Length: 167
Ligand SMILES: CC(C)(COP(=O)(O)OP(=O)(O)OC[C@H]1O[C@@H](n2cnc3c(N)ncnc32)[C@H](O)[C@@H]1OP(=O)(O)O)[C@@H](O)C(=O)NCCC(=O)NCCS
Image 1 (cartoon, rainbow, N blue to C red):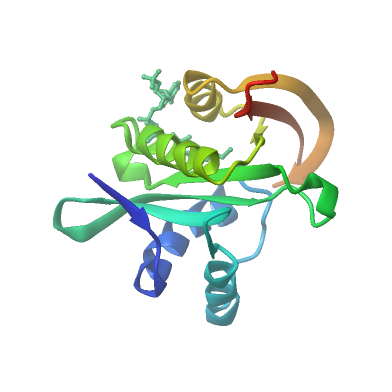
Image 2 (image 1 turned 180 degrees about the vertical axis):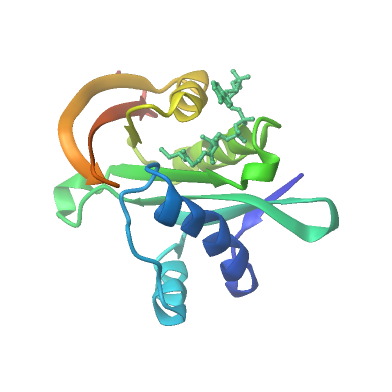
């Protein structure tokens, strides 16, 4: 498996994986697919070391999953915090792809001096909770009934990983 930075040629594969969750799942609270221009804009904002987008390429150049870091907030005092996203194609889950992507993201975050990575995980997603816990994330709270998708009101677990020595 090769983990590398995403580029324009990966956008179709990245959004094919993501849009399955947009349209049929609750892992993301996005409910609408992105236009080609919005996809390109997403990549343009995920090309800096602090907010990278990466892909996991398996045999034959197939994109098995992707991950990214995004600013937690556009308010400047939050600049030491970022939120992560990790999405693995259904055919490639349970084989270490998500773990490899998250390991790579954490290493990139450390190199840029980021202080904390936050993850928001919808209720009923044990794979994501286990994935994050296995990399040292801890649950810091449950945001109760903050989401609604497919007619269900949903809680969201907030998890954090501190990268600095102070915690
Ligand atoms: C969550 C997700 C990214 C995990 O990716 P994956 O490639 O299947 O995960 P891995 O095979 O690398 O496993 C990572 C860890 O999670 C655990 N895990 C994986 N699937 C699991 C499941 N269904 N139930 C419980 N634990 C699970 C593994 O045992 C592993 O733990 P370990 O490293 O201690 O052995 C993947 O299931 C996915 O894309 N789900 C839909 C999108 C999503 O929920 N994204 C996260 C949004 S917060």
